[in-house]
Image (cartoon, rainbow, N blue to C red; front, side, top):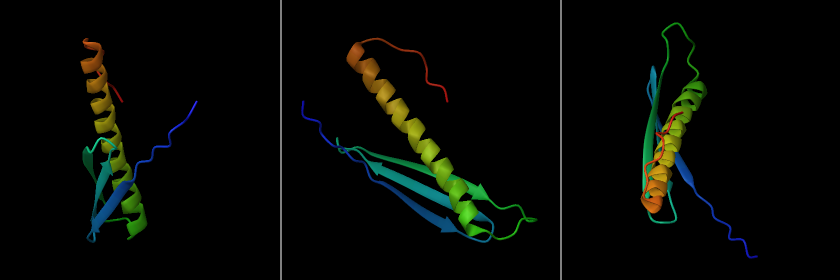
Length: 91
């Protein structure tokens, strides 16, 4: 049996100011579909300036959003192919 290697490349970009970090995630699927997601993090005024932590939080939130969109896409494709409606997705 021949196995095919498939890979996805996820891109993350960040924009930061002194109190907020915004992350944008993008994945291009083999079928040509692009899925985009965003995540945000805010620094509490009493916290020290740690840009890496803001990136981690905002990046994780963007990736979580991306994951839920991919699950929904797969769920919809399964329903279409099977001709039935399955149970709703939950986290």
